[in-house]
Length: 373
Image (cartoon, rainbow, N blue to C red; front, side, top):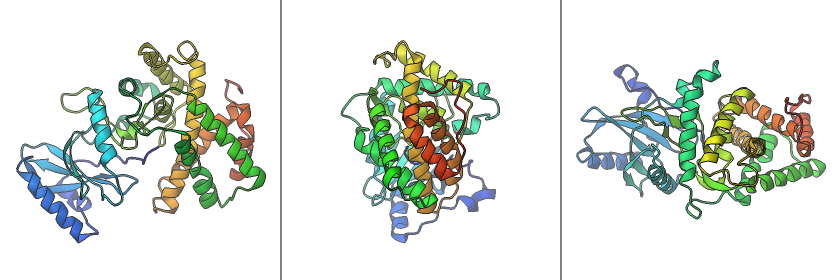
């Protein structure tokens, strides 16, 4: 996962102007920003005094919104170059637009100071439109997301994006013992415990690297998808700067095993099957027996989801303990449920499940109706 993206705020009004005020910790950076914005005001018809906070994310990046003289809005990315590398954002935005996806257009980029002017995809995320109590009411939205995902994957070419290789997969997995266990739970793995995790992690990486590779958004979920606005009928796509070239199973696992939303297995299977059918027709499932056996593909999705969930639990602990953002760790129980459910399904993950249950003080759970594999 890349960094979780927070939903954009509501449009600016005079009543809430104070809450949208743009504050700067660095006066020199503020002066650079003002000079840059003033230089763009004429060519892009901007109204500089209308600048206000749009959203922030879990990194050092934040987003501002500014009006145009024609009554439209633009987004400004404020990404300090000593803390954030914006080159991947520009690269992936171009790749997505070339693939026919609706991604922000980069209108101006001051690379030296880390300021970027972008087209505005609106302020309504897919998450804001979801009814969590009625899964089927969201079916159409999820199918739009599936269509965008298949379109993105069909554009894939090797050697363009960084590889989602063993080194990166392992580095992400290490976040769980380093941050969730050691820092959050106060558990330092040693001896037999360390061996259990090492064996499980090696198996997880091996299984996931066996999958065919495509472009991977790496945080493809409703909080990073924007509702259609204007004349477009497409969902918009955000927070894609950490995209890589890796397992095709990743983004569908990210979509259906959400960091902030839990669905029953029936709905997860329904959407995943429909994704599989579309991907198969597009020629993306020509691997082993995946084109004819959904169960084989779904097992790969579960193993990929397990890697993601272990990583995200570690990231959320780090965001809370290092970065002072406690709201993220509040979602950790969802990830522990995902982790335990998947481990319970596969015999080779039994030792990992047992150890996590011991650490968490939870009781062994009853297997899904699928049984153990």
